Picture (tube, rainbow, N blue to C red):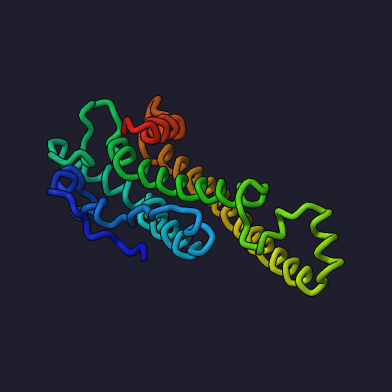
Length: 220
């Protein structure tokens, strides 16, 4: 479902982006999935597949990609490719790659995880309808009345509630775990960029927060 995108650009991104050494990064990145509560509840495997593909295409190959960028920058200082040289002579050649590839992928993954965490938390907090036959919305008095009048129906409703609640708790743990994985992956990548690239005063984490904020507000 989330295999590599064939790309639909008019060539602008391809002209701008070169590495590994001549493959267009954008075309190898998985598209961000359409998000909805139903997807979070029923298609977590596809979302996990997207997260894995995105990490594999960027963070997992980061060391070799950064070395390729820096090596090419040294070989050809006049390269027309923005991944090979910065517009500013004193700026690391890694920064354009970071801004054009890494930040957008981080943002896509964070968006997926945070959205589904919010949906599951909303359900578990009782602010959304749970697929449990309405049991979670019954008052104690209503439950007692059903139990007294029709204990078999009560038992069925209770079991459906327990199954639904268990599934939602499982999903909560899944998305919370993906959140932890994402934190570990991004921290590792930040450390790697600081070790390999001469970033100077460029704050990788701080600038990502700015990117994510401006992107959310439609300014990116």
